[in-house]
Amino acid sequence: MTTLSAAERAFESVRDAIVRGTLAPGTMLAENALAEGLGVSRTPVRTALARLQDEGWITVFPKRGALVRGLDDRDVLDLADARHMLESSMVARATPAARAALADRLGAEIDHQEQVLRAQDLDAFIDLTVTFHRSFVEVGGNALVLELESRLADRHRHVLHLHGAAMLDRWEQIVAEHRELVVQLRDDPAEFSRALRLHQADSIAPGSRNQ
Image (tube, rainbow, N blue to C red; front, side, top):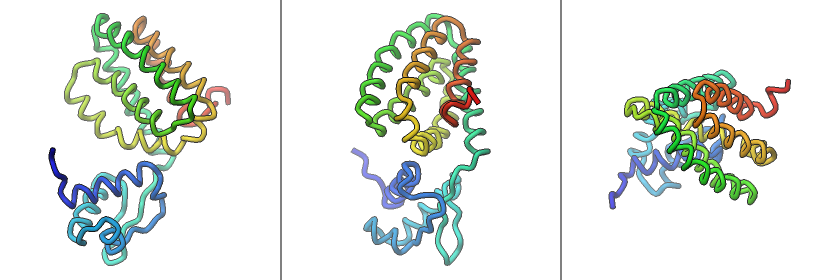
């Protein structure tokens, strides 16, 4: 079992708190308080904060601390566009046999999604839905595109946490949309792309297609 370095532990702890919304946008982070809370020295905390800034999660102000950044409307739309391009292009690239095999597997996974949504288990659903959407990129068999998707996964997870209450309110619609994606995955990549766009629109602004 690999033991994480102090800097890696600090990075993952702060990043996960931001992704989950525990550290809200606008929160100021102080090196001393973080170091004390994590039980490490200031040096690994400083290293972690620099990495978090490189990844766009915070803005560091020398001698003042670090400000947690949020995702504005443009950021959320850009993320949806990027994810749509990756997922739809990889589905279009996949062979019919690969798409059919994935559709068979995802049917059971959606049943699991429905179970956790019925139980109002938001954390479990977010884990499942991130994996569900990653499957559409995996099916294309392009390692570089999959690497790009991995770089977006935490932002995807963050947006899901931001809209958590709304998702729980409309869980039946989410399950129905996921089942429709699987149907179109098997039958028609072009219709899959269209259904994915509508699904993303509702995920960003529930009910937006009716406005």
